[in-house]
Length: 123
Figure (tube, rainbow, N blue to C red):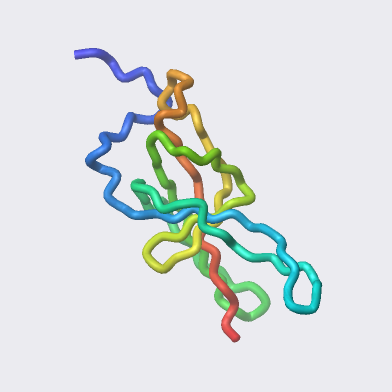
């Protein structure tokens, strides 16, 4: 049996069981001609989301909760970067870091994104 020398274990394609949408922010003029930021879908792909940890802290007398995770993709037709975000199971995930060569062989066949959940403040 060959030893796995990869930085991260290669994820079997059968483990990619979550549908994850990749979005990119663009600016478009609104009806008044002012530029508005909007999020456009680049595609929905199979991936694996793993929750790594969550924290809760008191900030300005309010509880601030954060959740961090990792999303693994294989053979994406999109070059991910930190200006994009992911949508998964009703949650918005901001990309903190992208490791495109996590398979260890430079082929980009496995991509790991480190993410944090973006929580909108209550209205």
